[in-house]
Length: 139
Image (cartoon, rainbow, N blue to C red; front, side, top):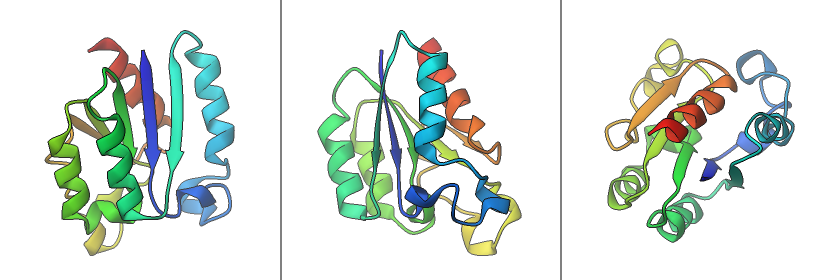
């Protein structure tokens, strides 16, 4: 099965940005570990700091027989358009947040993506991606 992992703004800085919140590993390094754990599946990775590019990517891939793991970053809390894109596509989407958004600033407590995604994994660090992947592979 092909699984797309889509990361939003500032997630290109994993390992550098606030390591006490997001950890010390880059996503590319973590992705290599995921590929070793799931060698029989094709993992594709896309990251953008631009809302429209994330929406375009969802539109482009969202009607294929795939699964999508989406960490929309800060757009989770602000982008109705991104939530609408998740609702408009056929591919199942699992939302992932590295940090526990409910334990952070008040504006981060609500995600527009949550109601449109198949499920959400929050606050389990980078391991949330592995758990999302395992779910998509069993459904």
